[in-house]
Amino acid sequence: MNITFFASTQLLRLITANTITATLGGAAMLFAAGMLITSPSPAATPDRRAALETAGIPRIDDYAAAGEAARSSQAMLLVSVEPTGGDPTDMAGQRLEQAAVQERFLRSGTPWVFCRIGMPEAGALVADPSLVEMRRGPGVFVVDHTGGPLTGLVVSILPRTSGKYYRFSPSHIDQLASLPSGTLTQRSLILAVRIHPENPQSTFGFCNPMLCQEAAAHSAHQARIRTQGHHNWGQRSQRIVGNAGGAGSASEVCAESWENQDLLDSCVDCVASWRQSSGHWNAVRSPQSAYGYDIRRGSNGIWYATGIFLR
Image (cartoon, rainbow, N blue to C red):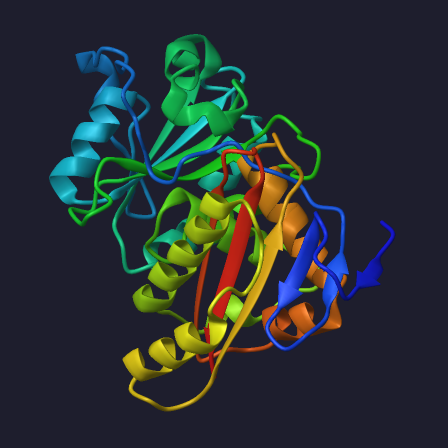
């Protein structure tokens, strides 16, 4: 990837407050934040309703029954859609059975229900618009049933079909246990930061809901005007610091993508683009007291990512 620095505004660039503009390759996404599962679920049958207790996490290999169990226990529902149902050698299924992985989910502070189903029975489900980011194939998705404002929404998707930038690894399942509460766009961008090979530290502080709202609002603003930038950053930064109690300082990173690509391809590529700028990467890789990330798509098919930090 070639990088050229410009003083003028250019398409496909990164901008950081108080730094120069970098023209970089990006990627795009195809998503609207927080999507509902609307497709009919497979009928629950009595012989498949029994939960398999493994390390204290219920595993119910029927989507309808698993959803009922998650709702009744106000749990997160993790669904692994596998090429063949019941395959003991499936890489995602094997990962979910590992004691260390189950321990991560048990220690997350949130109850979980696991569900493993095969593509033959999940075909209609995967084809639903709410799961467009599954790339119409096997993968892992999470539905929030914890009783909060995101209840009933898909909040994470890991497609197993390779894209332009995102390549599924079973180890990515581990990250789902510790992602903060948030929308699909927020959690996907945070995931992309966490799976970067250099292990950037900005997402290991406090995920501040106010900063997430600010990141969402600014990403939406950029998407609406179809222009990337730190618009009104001076005013916004003062408001952010004031809302945080007046202590510390705020910083921001922004990126934009190539058009008409999907969610995780764009998130991964935006993080890679931040890596190409020392100013952006210093903010993303450094420990932060608090952070918020989000991304939105404009009518031009380009997605606009924002990260906001407090130190």
